[in-house]
Amino acid sequence: MAETKAPVERPLSPHLLIYRWPLPMAMSIAHRITGCGLYFGTLLVAWWLIAAAAGPNPYSSVAAFMSSFFGRLILFGYTWALLHHMLGGIRHLIWDTGHGFTASEREWLSLATGVASVSLTLILWVLGYLIMGGSH
Amino acid sequence: MAAGKMSTPLARVRGLGAAKSGTEHFWRQRLTAVANVPLTIAFVLIVVSLLGRNHAAAAQILGSPLVAIVMLLFIASITTHMRIGMQVVIEDYVHDEPAKLILHMLNTFFTLAVALASGYGILKLSFGVFGV
Image (cartoon, rainbow over all chains, first blue to last red; front, side, top):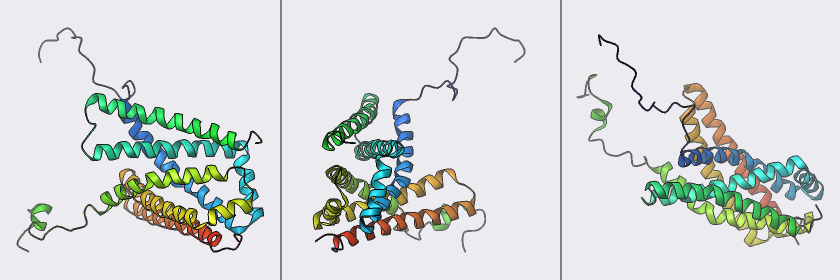
């Protein structure tokens, strides 16, 4: 360590701030976040069911909230979280069997989870608006 | 005790046999995950079928035996699943013992309350208050 050498161009270790997130890592984090979101999202399901059991007036209050912009936004997020967590769960179940662990399979499965959850959410919402006949 | 202060925890439990319950949560989380897939699809279809309907129609559909049973299974499976899931999240991020204990209790209270409230709603509809 006596003499100072000229700095050598070496690859730097991946610092957290400049580290490109690998897709499976991003999907793993998304799986946990959507799981936590769904945890509290079940309050909406419980509220809706209780209101349905309580009678027409409480039910229309829930329906009014769900029809508002804020309600729609929450429902849209809930739909995506539900589908994303379900598809991510299926991916984890595949991994539990010991399959799908090569680099390309990991990437493919993670990408498929994201693409499919967004696509299915949009399809469901288009379907929903078609069912309601554009009246809402 | 034959094993003194210098022994590892492993040495102290060696020979006592397995606890027989180490994989209980691991397995239950996967069991409910498998159940959640068809039940979630069914739940989404039920919600879609109720879109735009008034209370009387929604109550009748939700209270019909098949829909009510599927909804009850859905609620039972997801609340079991989310209780274990949130327990893992708490264990991962909360390392202060009293806070962890309180959060574990709140987790159990919350998931049981959601399960019972939802189940109560479904059963009340199903037992014909607004149905027939």
